[in-house]
Amino acid sequence: MAERLQKVIAQAGVASRRKAEKMITAGQVTVNGKRITELGTKVEPSDKIEVNGVPIEKETLHTYLFYKPRGVISSVKDDKGRKTVVDYFEDVPYRLYPVGRLDYDTSGLLLMTNDGELANKLMHPRNEVPKVYVAKIKGLLSPEDIHSLTHGVRIDGRKSAPAKLKILKTDEKKNTQIVQLTIHEGHYHQVKRMFEAVHHFVEKLSREKYAFLTLKSLTSGEYRELTHEEVSRLNHLSD
Image (cartoon, rainbow, N blue to C red; front, side, top):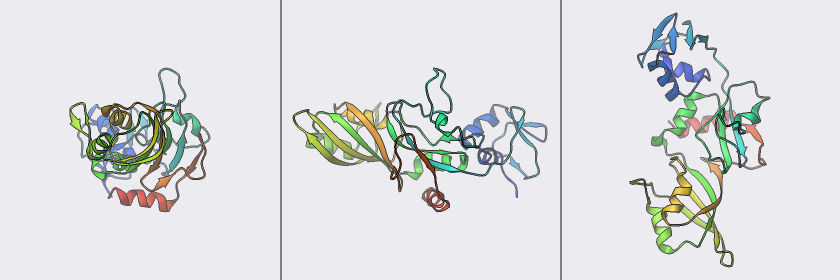
C-alpha cells in the first residue's frame, strides 16, 4: 500500500516526520534514483528510498521511558562534547532520539524512540499531552500568583495555556516552596519562564509524569522499554 514519503522515512527511524519533510524539500531524498522535493509524494513498499545517498531500512519500532539525570543534553549529539541522552542507550541496537526535550539542568521523564510517527503525534500542540513537573521555587506563591499561573501568564507577548497547580511543601524559614505544575504545552523553558513571569526563580525542576506514564521503579539514568499496551495507549491519546 502506498504511503507518504515523509511517513515512511519517519517510520524507518531516520528522523521525525517534521524533520523528514524538511529533508525532502531540501532535496536530500531520492526515490528509485529520482530526487524528490515535493511533500505528499507517495511511495510503494518496493521503492528504493535514499536519504543523503544512504538507503533507508525499516526498523522495528521501539519506545523507551528514560529517567533523565540533570546535566545531560536532550539531543542526539552536542557540539560542546557534553553528555547526551543517547549516551545512555549505547547497548540498544536502534537509532533513538528524544520526544521533545528537557532542559540541561532538568531531570525526569523523557521518552526515547525510533518511532517518528508516534513522536510527531505526541509533540503536536493539538494533542495537548499533559506533563507533570515538580519545581522547587524561591519565594512563596501568593493567591495572585496562583491565579495567574492557573489562568495563563504572558511570555514573550503570548499567554500560556491554563495550568494545574498544587503546593506540595512550604518552608517559610528558607523562603522556598515545592510546587507541582501540570501543563500540556512544551515551549522553550516553559515551566521556568512561567514561574519567572510571577517573579519566582526555579531552583530545581523535574518532570514526574508524561500522559499516564510515571518514573515508578526507575532511578536517575535508568530506562525501560514501553509495553505494546503502553505504546497503544499513547497512540490512542494522539488520535
